[in-house]
Length: 160
Image (cartoon, rainbow, N blue to C red):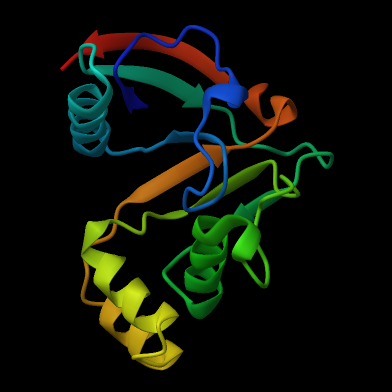
């Protein structure tokens, strides 16, 4: 988790809304991605770039609702767009935290133009999906409820 401070206790109320998978605490398995995010956040909000390392114990608890996107699909694209649109969204989204944990690709800056073109009706969904296949996508794990946070253990942190 790349940010501008050490995170010893996760406070979901401090998480920003309208992210790819909704308001939540986001992690990645990619060290470089976390480090870039830490640098970006510290430039915007001040503080020093810090990567907080957590261990995720995979869920087998039937009370936890996990949504997994293995690849950028139409369902994933619509889900991300709906979460980013917030109250204006139509269709499946995670605004009410019906999914405790969501796992899937990051809709990074490389996809921003494609998403805008699709949202504005300039391209069809099949074009969006086809073009996404040529983009290098990274991963994200988002935790949306206190129940989900039970599966995270803080291991360490370091300055970038």
